[in-house]
Image 1 (cartoon, chains in turn cyan, yellow):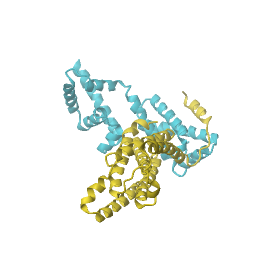
Image 2: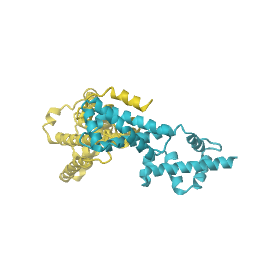
Image 3: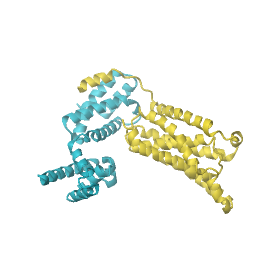
Image 4: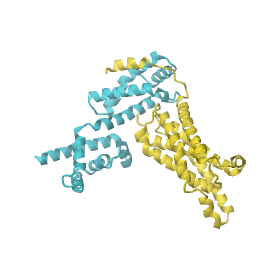
Length: 179
Length: 213
């Protein structure tokens, strides 16, 4: 059964008034909502999704004072969910091996940083323009996904997908060429 | 941890939350910072000796009118950015009112003053230090607001940082009026605003790093 806005908002307000029971029910109702939200938007593993759900529940609980009783509950909730998703992937991405690869490309100077730079330019030149631009924006110029998306007037998921696909084909090319 | 266990654990602690908690929290952080800035002005920079006389004059209230109304507008924006659902900001235009009014006064002032004195009026005695002092006084207030934000939930960190910096700068300028003897509108419009903008820029730079939660 899906909870609706009025129901959730009522529970939230009761929770804010100190009704622990209402708060518990609210958190339980949020679990399926958040799971489906993250399944749709986060495109991560089941563990990632459960982590995100839990992080968001904790955020909803610890930041409940920032909910304005006169405003829609779900827009408050999904604003938090979206923020947690961006933050989560910003942190987790650092641990993924693909990041090390591009660190190698950018930073390690086999023939000096300038030559590496040319390599990067060359490699990026082999990709479709949009993918190359998004990789340059997010991985070399250091913009966040949101910033890159805003700068190019694209959706954030569009940027993520472009970067991901681009890096993947770069990896394939480098590994293929090196062997 | 299992999600059900997590919920059980979270539900063990559900205190009552009053309606204006966000406002109170911001107010407390601001007040703490203001006390520190005020102390710096009184103890280090010194209160202007003619303060009690100046408080009967127009230019003092023009300055306070400008900085206080800017502070209020900045806090209104900051309070919105302290909540997660801040995609659409309301009352942003409030910020333009004090600036426009002061610019109007500045234009009148220029009309009434012979051109030869414009430069002296614009630079005053302290144009080189004024923005930096405002920025310095903004730092404790900004720290106070950072403390407030630790319990709040900004999702647009750069904007929230900029708004907090702007509020800190505007309050810092308000406190600085107690020290600063300058009287001209274009002086305030330029150098006070520059200090306030510096604070806002610092906030925008620091926001994404310091406001994460």
